[in-house]
Image (cartoon, rainbow over all chains, first blue to last red):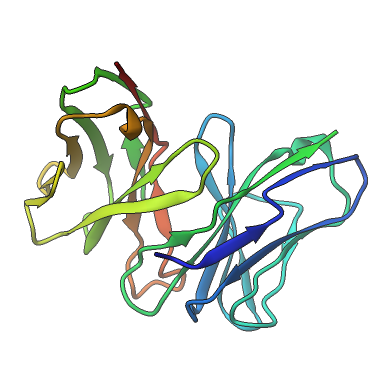
Length: 112
Length: 115
């Protein structure tokens, strides 16, 4: 079983607030990913990282930012939350071998 | 670019077989994956198949791969209400690419199992 954690699981916050979504994994995986998932189910990659101090934008443009100071930790920050940021955010990681990714339980963000 | 397509919905009766289909465009994939997402949860790796295999069976799950037609399917035998979930197929990008390790996901198929 994969050991990847996300906090908080649910967050309701007002417009303009700064938020940080936490993601941690204990598997020593070098690659980590953030996805945004629509209510209509489709997954969109918004950020990824291949290791410490490596971060890249994903396929879907996002106003969020990420950092990778430690291998196990990949937080996502929104400087000023807006209602359009309301979504489910999923974090994942993968190791050196095959590409299978292990997912955290997700953070459901609601911006009012 | 690479693309993965799935039908969005499937409804079956408990005890029937379910077949979820997926088509992909990247012909160089070494693995193809199936993930399951239960309500309110993250994605769980369900099974995968190597590209040099035509079929893989794992208990109630059968994965069929037709490389010529770039078609992947997941069959669930004796479908139970607990199988109700969203199922994603995923195709990895080539390992020699700069953005290696990324997965291209289909849109997800919502399986509804009626008692």
